[in-house]
Length: 128
Image 1 (cartoon, rainbow, N blue to C red):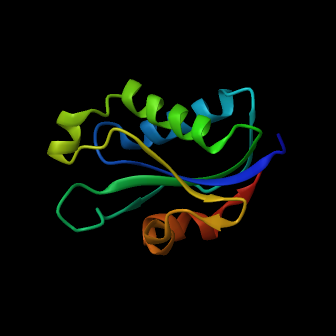
Image 2: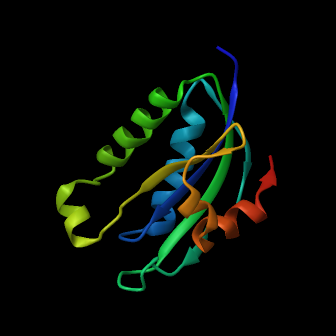
Image 3: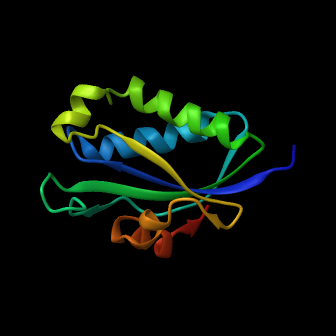
């Protein structure tokens, strides 16, 4: 399988938000089939609808041979292992959220792509 380039959005709005985001980036870097190409600094944004706590966010660009399904499943399993469950969702608490926003330059999450929580990081990513 040919390598793909992916842009992910990472966010957390509870607990040690910055640490949660750093842990998610470190986790991604620990996966054998993932190479981190660029990343933003960690930054804060308001909750999308202005009702919840602010988020700490980062945007990363990776290269991987993993399929979309395998990467998506791995991200969701990491979220669950970090405490994200139905109770958290009902309370609006997000220990960690990892979303695949772009895959090989194709925008998979158009709404996220236009929001500040993504654009700030996307526009400030630095090569490693």
